[in-house]
Amino acid sequence: MPRYLIEVTHENKKESCDQAVRAFLATGSHFMTNADWGCGDDVHKTWFIADLENKEEALRILPPLFRENAKVTALKRFSMVARDEIREEHQD
Image 1 (tube, rainbow, N blue to C red):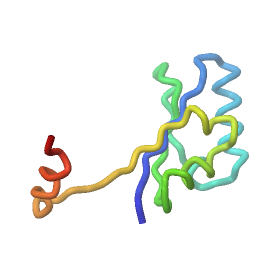
Image 2 (tube, helix red, strand yellow; image 1 turned 120 degrees about the horizontal axis):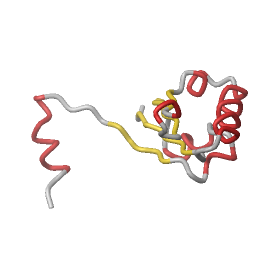
Image 3 (spheres, rainbow, N blue to C red; image 1 turned 90 degrees about the vertical axis):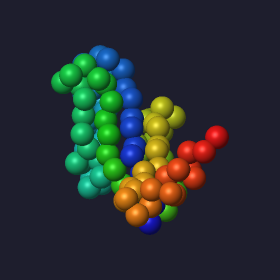
């Protein structure tokens, strides 16, 4: 199953941070209740990794308020055996 890094940005305001944390925790989703937050370092984003079918599913698990500004990135691990595959994916 594909693996995705989901990044959600919110405003640099105490109220926005509080709202984001409450919204994520209220979902009860193990993805979101275990999300990592950057607010303490003045990076007003949260991140989590999830194994999902596609990017659309990744957006659907987010609280609706945060879907529009979310960034979903497909992740892939490479091994030394797959180094030729890495080169093929990055040829111009």
